[in-house]
Image 1 (tube, rainbow, N blue to C red):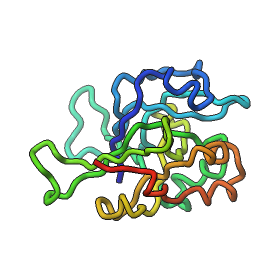
Image 2: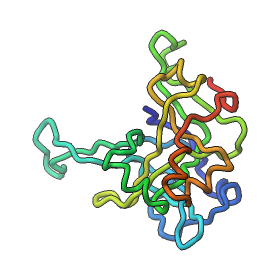
Image 3: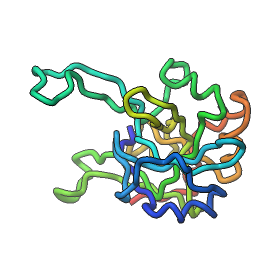
Length: 208
């Protein structure tokens, strides 16, 4: 499961590259060069026939009870943030996949997967970092919705890993879109979008 990726903080780095404009409805500010569950990130989506760059929290949240009684000022529950969408028949993901207006691009610079203990070279060496080499602004295939507690939230799709990722993380990898497939993900009927949920060519990626 990918729960950490890097991104460009300055939104101007996306406007020309992804043919988008700033979303006037943005409330959240992206201040870190990484995204983590429940924290802000950027997505590109369509609104009124135009691509907009929106800020949203990463993950579809679900409530869970606390293991101890809530203290004064605390909510009686916590949140799980579901950041990776894999089973497209799940009611968590399917309603948004079916609607093109709820598909989005999630721009990134690199993404991580945890290293096995045997692969670590030192105390801080905990992650493999994967990079796309053939696109200046690569994007994951994402889904977004409006959540009752957290307003706009997003997740990205995952799939079987390619030969580069599989030896490091055999369970899954994010769906990265070829540049020529980004528009299809954003606007095509679902039967044309579904085939895009496949692994990125490993020869176009690197790992460190």
